[in-house]
Structures are given as C-alpha cells and as structure tokens.
Image (cartoon, rainbow, N blue to C red):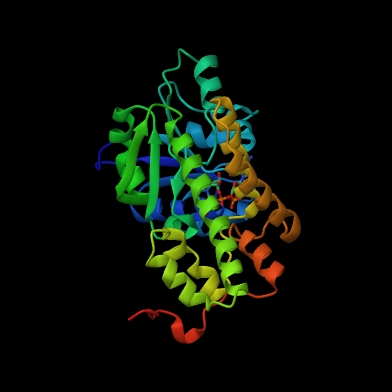
Length: 314
Ligand code: NAD
C-alpha cells in the first residue's frame, strides 16, 4: 500500500461505529465505496466524495480492501456469502477485514469453500465506543497474518490509536480477545451497579463511596471513568445498543462452551443484561443494567453537581 495513489476502501455497515470510522478514513485520504441497507446512512460520506454501491458484491469489485462493520455473525454471513455478497465481487487475492464483534465461523467457511482464491481475511474488532470511532481513537485487535497487519496498518491507523493497534494472534484471535474484553467490562458494570446500589441504600454518599472504591484495591477503570457517563449525565450509552451487548455476551458464552471452560459468572451477567433488554428495549444503551439497580432502590445514581470534576478526598 503506497501513498502514490489512494487506496480504495470498501465499507459495509454505516451504523453507530461505521459512520465515524468511514469519516476518519475519508479524512485520511482513502477513496471510499460504501453500502448499507439504510442508504440515508451514507449521505454525509457521499457529500464528501464517497461512492455508493448497491450491493456488497459491487463494493468488493471496486475496492482494494473491503471492511465489514455489522451487528452480528448472521449479518456478516449474509453480506459475505449471500446473493450479491462480497464473495461474488471480490477479486482473487483480495482482502476482507471484518471489524464486527463476531466469531470466526463465517471466515473459516470462506477459507474452506474457496481455498484457491488466495483471499486475505483478517478479523479486527474494536473497542472504544462510538466516541472512539468518531475521534479515530479505537483500539483494534487484529487476528491473522502479521504481514497483512503491516500492509493494512495505514487503514487501521486512520480509524484507531496507533499505539493500540495490536496483533493478537492467528485468524480468529481478534474476535476472541474482543469478546473477552466485553465480557469483563460488562461484568465490571454489573458488579459496580450492585455495589453502588447497596452502599447508597446503606446511607453512604454516592461520590464518597466511589472515591473510596477508587482509593482501594477494588478500583477499576469502570468505577473510575466509565460509570461517570451515568453519574454525571444519566447517559447509558445509546451509541451501543443493549441488544448488541446481549449478542456479545451470548457469543462469549458460546466460546466458553466450545473450549470447555465453565462460565458461571458470565452466564449470570448475561441474564442480568437480558433482563435489562427486556425491560428497557433493544435500543436502550449498553449501560442500562445499572438502571435495573436504580429502579430497585428507587434512587438514580447521580453525583451532586458540586462534586463533578472534584476530588472528594483532597
Ligand atoms: P449499528 O446497528 O449501529 O450499525 C450496523 C449497521 O449495519 C447499520 O447501519 C445497519 O443498517 C447495517 N446493516 C445491517 N445489515 C446489513 C446488510 N445486510 N447490509 C448492509 N448493511 C447492513 O451497530 P454498531 O453499534 O455500529 O456496531 C457494529 C459492530 O461493532 C457490532 O458487531 C458491535 O457489536 C460492534 N461494536 C460496537 C460498539 C459500539 O459502541 N457501538 C463498540 C465496539 C464494537
């Protein structure tokens, strides 16, 4: 990949994540050809010079590299293997990067069904929320050949934090790492919600409790940073729908089952997430399980404005 002529990146899936990622690819000078089942999602990109394609096959035929950023493995399968899917358009020796939070089965099937086409297939799921997608600071976990990462690095760097674009192993490892990250983060969220609800109900000031946790061995990034969206703004992060969080937790448990490791805690966290999804709807934010606890104790977990940005313990 050289800078002499722009690489054409095909991008399929212009949702909460894909919209920010494509804007950053465009800003970095990549030529874009895009597709989504919602054509309106491409309006801003098309105004900026991107080209619309009616099908994933057309995207693939016109691109040097095709990226998918889709909700679930089922969507990835349809876009890759379906009628007018990527496989119907991609040239032999072409590159497909799946950045969705997904599982290796779809890519494995492509490899098994098309052993002679010389396709380069890379899994590269991301962390960093929709805000990371917007500001080009995603963490990217790449599974596949190191030489592919090296070749594709300029594309990844347009979307992610160069320091946190990690080669995590062979094909499929990126998916596994991403599922484990989400599993742990969702577990932190549920554990934190439970602790804050109990402490507040026991009469401790919310911010005093949080600062005590931060000062203790029980601190976590969730307690210190991520929970503040709720505590300061009542923001449960609708940029990541709870339906997708439940999908990730299900995939994570499937993975545990497939490798024969019991996942009791993950199972419980999944059930709590599913309860929140049933109660607040598919589109509710990924942090809505905290609301289950707020509703239970009849108190919204919010910091008093005076403490926002201040240390309780000087
Ligand atoms: P989203 O639902 O906002 O976007 C998905 C997009 O795919 C939509 O625009 C949808 O119209 C499109 N789509 C669905 N089926 C399609 C098809 N057959 N052809 C073309 N387009 C199709 O989802 P998102 O939040 O952007 O998440 C995308 C992926 O990234 C998911 O796997 C998710 O788990 C993962 N992820 C999301 C976040 C986040 O904070 N939102 C963070 C990290 C990873």
